[in-house]
Amino acid sequence: MPSEALPLDRAMLPTGLGAALWRGIRGKCPRCGETHLFAKFLKPVERCRLCSQNWTLHAADDFPPYISILLTGHIMAPVIIELGLHTALPGWAMMLIVAVLAVVLLVSLLQPAKGGVIALQWWLGMHGFAGRAGKAEAGLT
Image 1 (cartoon, helix red, strand yellow):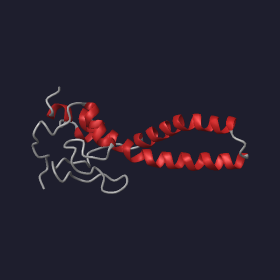
Image 2 (cartoon, rainbow, N blue to C red):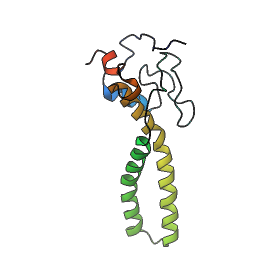
Image 3 (tube, rainbow, N blue to C red):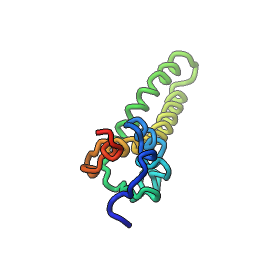
Image 4 (tube, rainbow, N blue to C red):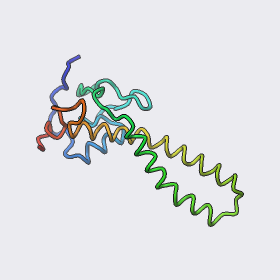
């Protein structure tokens, strides 16, 4: 397998940061947008099957969980307030509902957050993608 990504037609490359982020959030390859970015729930594929982009270069680390926690907290705050003000549920039932909703929301936001962070790093040429920025490849620098 080649060490560098295969050349792509410019029409397949994202037209801006938003397009690259959207591809990553959807779990697609941010470079070509055609194949899956993840081999497992949070483990990205080593290389894209279509464009051969190396996705092991990312350094997403703790940023995706931070994004997931931040979004979950902001989404859950009004839910908790509404449950507290407008329901006659006992406290233990409200806590159970809130805990289940928060865990489901947190886990469901984790993969899109990681895909978006990987796409952001690739587009800006951060960390392992230094010298191979997506915006430079798309001719937008």
